Length: 125
Image 1 (tube, rainbow, N blue to C red):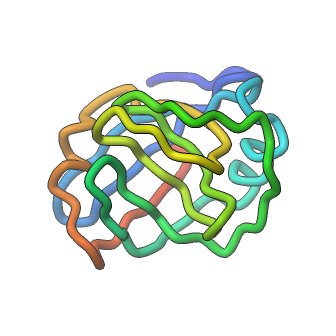
Image 2 (image 1 turned 90 degrees about the vertical axis):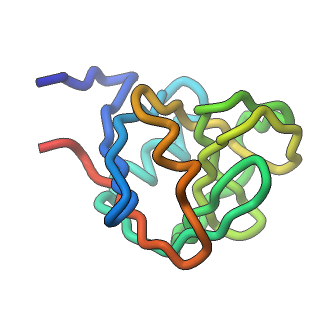
Image 3 (image 1 turned 135 degrees about the vertical axis):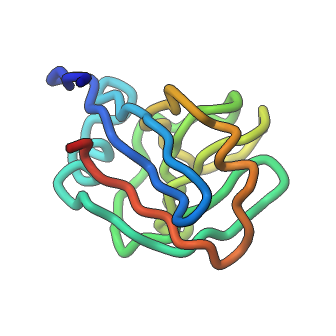
C-alpha cells in the first residue's frame, strides 16, 4: 500500500475495460489546481484523444497557474481552455496548461484509449 504525503497525492486512473495506472498529483506544481482537483475526486469522464495526449473532460473551472508549454510522456496537466485533465503519451509542446502531476505506472494503458472511452480518477483504496 502506498501512502500520500501533503505535497504528493497518489491517485488511481482507470481506463474502463482496458487497465489501471497509478499516478500522483504534485501540489507545488500548481497548488490551487491540485487542491481543486483533489477535492473533486472521484472524477469520471469521456476520453478525447490527440496524437500526444488524451483529455478527460471535467466540469471543473480552474484559472491559469504556473503554466508550461513543454511536457514529457507520463506528465499530467490541466487544460484551462476546455476544463480538461491531460495525460501525455508522447513528449509535446502545448500552450495553456497547468502542470499537476505524473503517471507512476502503466502509462502504456493510456495508449489504448480511443475517443469515447470512460476514464475514472480516484484516490486509491
